[in-house]
Length: 282
Image (cartoon, rainbow, N blue to C red):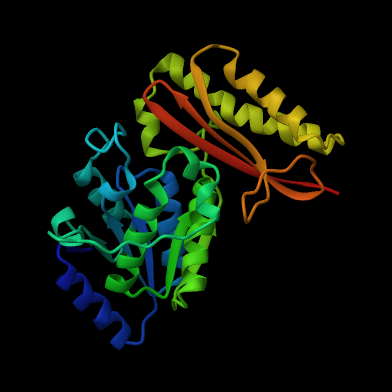
């Protein structure tokens, strides 16, 4: 596995891949890799000739009082996992390289970033779209792979790619869960034993909502109430939002007619956890 630490090294490597007529897949990550990340890399490896994984804890997507300084990092363990998997290249840019002194240019997708996580994390999506666009320009991938746990982020990136006519295919892959149902996340390591038990309530609440819809329930207020009761029953969780919305524009619904997305953001101890599922009432 090639380890590329500068933008110039990454550009030269990807240029050679393209000159050789090979397809290139990119998996952008912030490291502390888990099976969710590895599933993206495997999909890239199965569909592209070459795969590069980037690891960069992006300061521009963290707000004040968030966990930038304490975000979990385990670079050597990440490198070993990717090497065992057979990834072709690992890109490790520095913050000074990605945001040099005097950096003033940002990418902002409007409207759909005003909902869900965009309400409570104002800096988040501008930071995400800016770094992803920079990675696309540096790496020049044919395809880029993202997890559906961050479904709003996935749709924001798709919108950016469509609006700016970028020649990269965006591939979204299903949520990978722990055996207890908790969606895999690097931030899960913040959870103590009791907090981990509380965190399982997110998946339980989503399952309950899916069952209610399957039984004919269409009232969004009823679904939200039932989910909140499940999440808050032990007193350790603080709900950021419980949303039942349009799955592309994220506008809140009052009644479920056809397809909808249920999305959660919940603080459990130090961790802010998100999860979601798609539902359809026929």
